[in-house]
Length: 343
Ligand SMILES: [Zn+2]
Ligand SMILES: [Zn+2]
Figure 1 (cartoon, rainbow, N blue to C red):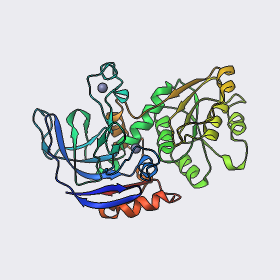
Figure 2 (figure 1 turned 90 degrees about the horizontal axis):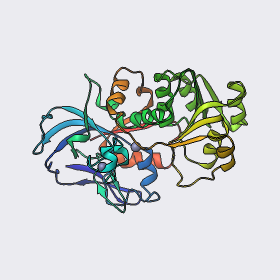
Figure 3 (figure 1 turned 135 degrees about the vertical axis):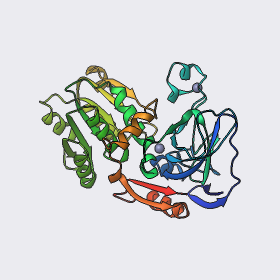
Figure 4 (figure 1 turned 90 degrees about the vertical axis):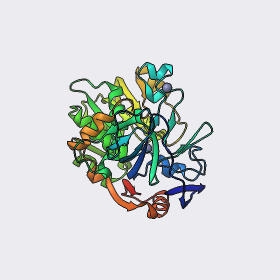
């Protein structure tokens, strides 16, 4: 089978690999669409330590069951599906307590690090355990279904905040995940959604997708602007979707006393943390990692367009053009949200 393999830092080859065989409880999936994730782009040069070559990346995919392994009861060839990016064991303490995203034996599709190497979906076929798979509703196009993973990430982050009626929300960063978070907030009934970014075109899209107010933080004190919009107090909750010192500080400065801050972005491993802001204003600081049970809801939201992913598809391209797209995205292609590869 054809596969786009990272063979050395920042170097891809279109290689021919044997079609994997599904083991017990596994499905062989013919991949129809797979999105390029920010973590793939940041990981391809080796800097994150999570894409050690050789590896076939790709964890935002949809496709068709091609073959079932032994002991698979409820799937048949031809079924349309997507799957979790996290392969959880289902047996450890975290899995049994219903926190599969924190599984002790967690592997992530298309990631290779010190502990594991798991081939992903930038290939004609991929093998996944049936327990992490989800059926596609109706005739949902594969390109849109490939968004189930990032949409699930956005839904999970909003769930972490347990939003109350009438609460206002700040979203710091209007990139792909930020724009999905804006829509997840709107879908959760949030009536005041303030988006902050450095780019006017992203903010215009944020407004179109549900932000009630947008602030370009290039032009001044964004925290003060948020307070102005919220009776001088600051937002009830903030979602930080970048992961750098200034954006984390903005999220913490712009929530009111007793507010909640959900940290989603992690583009840098450490940030300078404003300790006194957190302590003296008694903030709840939450982390949000991947997805825990939000897949069915994510697929329903994409299908009924309460989360519209179509404006976020910048390009769809054949797998053969993958290396070119990775180079372009790694160089920083402004205005590009999601590129979908079709093996
Ligand atoms: Zn991803
Ligand atoms: Zn587990």
